Image: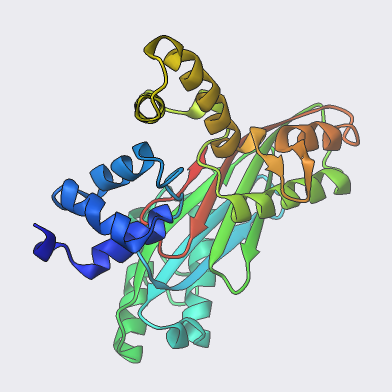
Length: 295
């Protein structure tokens, strides 16, 4: 089977787990080319502490954002191309910017809906706009993702030069939209861009993911020779660490690791005259196969 493991798959596994090339090759051989099983094997062996959160598909292009004037809704759109040269093209940039604005206005939930929506500048659909630009530039262009987020207050952030886009939403219970609160939410959006949380809180972690993590932590403990009777306590502690690493509210805040994101929200709420609760986020990283976020 080793002769049929392509070097590109080995590199992909290394990029996802941070393990060495030889370890990745052996893991793929052991799993007979099953990528997810190889990741699981590396984690259980202690070679990879955790799978990286980024998607596995590389692509050029741009992520663009639009936020409503009243700050209660936001949208993200991702337009992909083959080369960075095309991503810097003015017409390409204009199309993804208009697509984001259209996504916001139509409150689209995915790329399929956005592609069917009309562009105000031409009266044509977004799909026709993409096809027209493709014919003109002569390079494959696809609109891969779109999403909207609604809340009492929505703030966004685009990481230059348009490789990562984030929306963060909050519920305001008697709270006012103060500059301090808006700045805090923007800082949290920047935090999401940098730290790529998978969930908002432990309540958002699905049972399948939770059980898979417990199994991995238990197998790691067994591989380390830990007594079976103490493994449940070890797993419980590991799950707490998993929540801290994977859930936005419990992560150490990027600008002040001495505070959690939840504590930053609580502090910002003091200026607003009411309660503030983060309700969701959306994060697009250029080329990902899925969009991390909790809405």
